[in-house]
Image (spheres, one colour):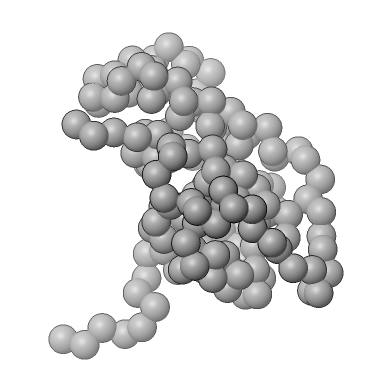
Length: 157
């Protein structure tokens, strides 16, 4: 089974996150559950470290840049986040779903994933996880959920 940290994060998000991005203090049980689900130890430990790093951002002050602020992507970021992903991040910021600070948290968490290029679906899920982890972001989280789960246009039958 080809697995990566993102697949484990999705599994954890679906099975363990309730009201916050905190895992049950019984890490041994979580690790055991992940092994039973077919994930390997190195990937499990990377995913748990990713979650820990995300949880640590909860109490950080979120800087607010003015509307004239421009984000310049580093070559490493541009290599991992294609034009579609960077455009979607800009859209989320312009729509008020992400602030400049939450955008930076998203980029930080994306860059900490495996070395593969990031797809738009992965980006959307990481945005949702970041928003879910931040206090006071319930409205932005709900907006992101609607973008993630509802088609952007009506489907014709």
